[in-house]
Length: 83
Image 1 (cartoon, one colour):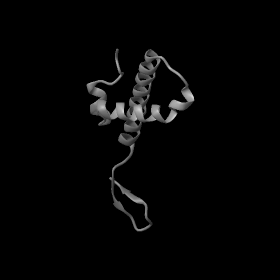
Image 2 (cartoon, rainbow, N blue to C red):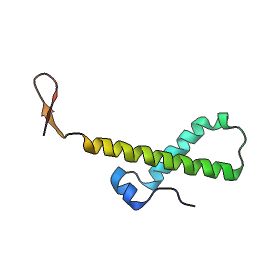
Image 3 (tube, rainbow, N blue to C red):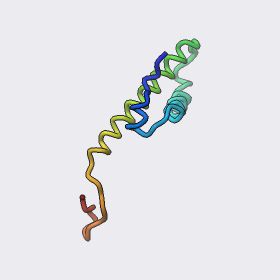
């Protein structure tokens, strides 16, 4: 079963498969009580869904960060100087 995370995703986001899985499992654990009893197949599906969501958010955040100008220092008014 595919996790939705590949080598190019890792390069763009800097997030490895174990990091994504840890975030996904932590978030799933936080919401576990509200989910009730799940079959093993449902648990696996939710883990995969969470990993895809974590990866997708990370990719989008990376795109936003890449689109921002590089800050090289602070100006006198506290605003960053842009390169």
